[in-house]
Length: 417
View 1 (spheres, one colour):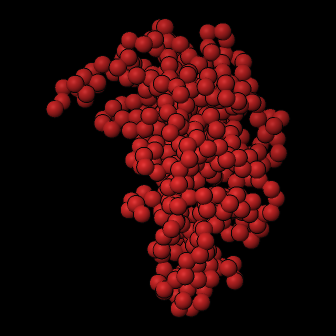
View 2: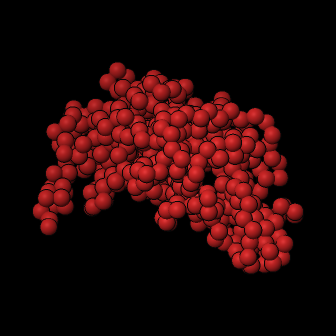
View 3: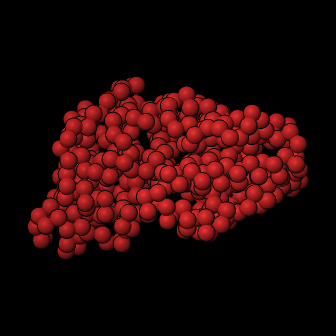
């Protein structure tokens, strides 16, 4: 079998690392794999103490925080002190396993008997996309192994060329934190087809700079060599469920509405306030650099920006909208938005970004940015501003990213060894 630290062996020789979580013993009987959804686990029993349990395979977020669950007592073993957002859904779903049918469609592009299975299932959009980004590595580094992707159907439009199979799961993201025996049954039916099986680790934060986003979206990203000659364009990402606030008081007020159940009726004032912040940013940028054009995208109701702004917002997503948004990002020197998974595809296509970073997301800085550069261009093209940044601050950064680019590029890309 292939020896690669980015692969977890499954068949014919299963993964055998990690001691018994009850006694620390290493004499273990390894059983079948279990595929309930987000996690991939393995049935085990300890020869020394007799403990029977399910062990996380080190894939996805279990790469750093592998859990185990006792089969007799339902006890969660969390030796690495993994975060509650990882282990709480796991143990809750294990104790409330669901037998309802979940449709999984198997699409075969090429027959292979030696495969890597990449499980991208997750209950958060960004987590699915980040796991899917791993596909390029496995396709390119292991051409002798077929890549099988387990994928929520809503991401079907992002399947890269070169995969052997796709198993499309008809499941809403919000349901993915459950334990679904139907998904496990489907996988167990497929595994006998293959002589050799590995599980891709599906890193939560893969390397972006060498990734070709065109293979996923079929949209070519902004070419940096055209930064100064292409029409100047900025795309604002304006989500109605993740707002840019002008002040701490505004943020507090919006959260209070949510707790009082008034967000639907009174929350529109804050959405319009975000639109005003964006308009004021545009006005300041255009005053300094005439001729800049703008687009606005995001889950929200279109309207209010005037005919000079291309407003691509919508409340209903489909493949055509996804492509239209990606094409807008790819025309943009700069994308502007609030921190979140909504920045992954924009930054994968645009030359750079200005991100509004909330205080409670400092520990997640750059996790939502598909960094396209290995060198110091990162520092110039990826800007992070205070969560209550003013339109003046946004405009200052955008203006600098246009007017200072030539000198910075010359000093850091041309006049170097």
